[in-house]
Length: 269
Length: 241
Ligand SMILES: Nc1ncnc2c1ncn2[C@@H]1O[C@H](COP(=O)(O)OP(=O)(O)OP(=O)(O)O)[C@@H](O)[C@H]1O
Ligand SMILES: [Mg+2]
Image 1 (cartoon, each protein chain N blue to C red):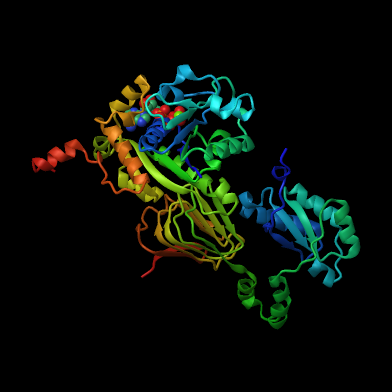
Image 2: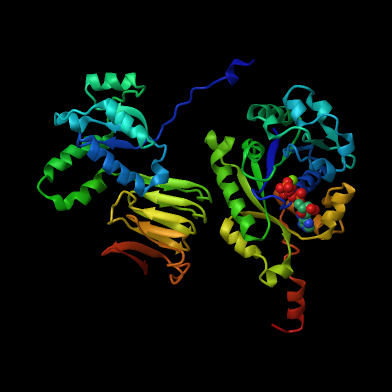
């Protein structure tokens, strides 16, 4: 049986797709057969970040409508043979997806894959609902700012009350916090919420902190998930996240301000 | 198509407030209902409601079921059942698509007995209401932004209540964690209701409709257990020691 992971946030632009691509690649690299699905119908971003946009023939909506079978639509990743991408359609709107159809596709994928990563669209409407409904685990992607934290909190309420697990009175979805675009200098200067503040408000199990990093943009421009950039801070932080998710212990990195560090070094305040 | 994916019957309970009528004057009923609704509009708007005519019928007070149903609907309540009606009232309700509920809850049965005992002592009224209230509702999961909880009883919450969440109870509210959202105790007007919490950072606290907002709460110490209650129409916030 596959484990279904939803990468969700409520708020847009916080790093869901970046995270979906990174952790799907991270899991696959460790030998777990993984599928990553783009639920952002109409926008279609994941295939760009995975660098497979030119190989998209059929998409998620085609499979749901029975116009193509899964094997025709799944794209094998160019860097890792354990990773497959199910792209979203660019030409349809959100109504093209439905709960029953999504359930069917996930069930079929479950037979063959170890992990299924669902890249949720922003918002708390239908698209985000469909992406989280069947999930076993949720990675709640949050930026260190008040509006993002509030939206994540809202999404957590939806996970706890509207998901399949909630409706069937099963063990609830396992919720993990992923703090992304973290900039310790801006936290230090008070422009952004600190890790502790976010943790206190959301009180969630923290899976990792991803620093704000140029390497993310570089990676997405070259169509390679940032986790494969092993020298970059963001890539290493994502590798830690995957390791922690799989049960390994890793200390947090990239959370201290360089300025603060220098100040400490020179004995200033 | 696979037969099993078309529909399912599941056992489950369905929550609806029960409207017990003691008076058959529709005008008075309407007025009182409007007041109740105004005290918790979010809860009552579009709420299902089951009406109970047993008190009326025991005292030979007849009520026009059709008029009652249309009154409820006009106030945007949804009558979903009649209880304690006579055969003609039940028949009329059925014709208007309101099913008959023959069940009687445990609390319904307790009520007349206690009342008879204390008939002459109006000041013990609050005690009776305490006895009639359902057992406390217990919540163990965090109450997140956008979620809302209503207890027709006391409400006990063991996890945090986020900003943007709302908890309401007809009785007392206990939050054994941080409250950042809105908490309304005694929403049906019980001025003796109290509110307890381990860390008060609320957007709003209210007892029987008398409230303070986060603006008024700035001075209250955070991360300290407090209780909130009414004294002479004023909300008192007190550290628990
Ligand atoms: N750690 C990071 N450091 C720097 N930039 C980042 C980081 N994570 C994400 N970004 C940038 O933020 C933008 C949004 O990222 P992404 O598309 O992953 O977010 P999203 O949550 O999927 O957005 P949407 O809600 O639109 O689907 C992108 O330009 C991406 O490059
Ligand atoms: Mg995205």
